[in-house]
Length: 169
Image (cartoon, rainbow, N blue to C red; front, side, top):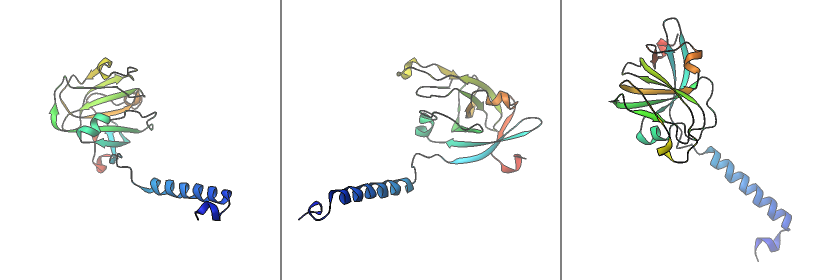
């Protein structure tokens, strides 16, 4: 005799719903393996330090995925792309499958901003149809923020990103 023969249908249905909810709750507790490390950093200009939160993309897969598919980015948050070796000036980023307009700052080894580019989402479903936003300067890191962020904070070429908490005064 199976469970359905011993219990009314409504009770079986209720048990199945409870099990489904319990199982989904367990899944919510499993860490997200795609989550990137998060750091509190700051952008430093001549007269101020602007604290921001960045997700740090270090591997090729993390950098390739970047902010693809995101529908929003918190106002003081961004993504920092870190490279072990210097990238050439003709290396750039594209906005394939990226849904939000972004600005990107290209940084040297010391975190000094060498160039800032404005990037717009690419509506094409083919990556080859998306423009590349070349750095124009050699770089070791790149910082993506919501479009207009750098300008709104008075951050420009020659300013610096610091990952040292003591610099974020």
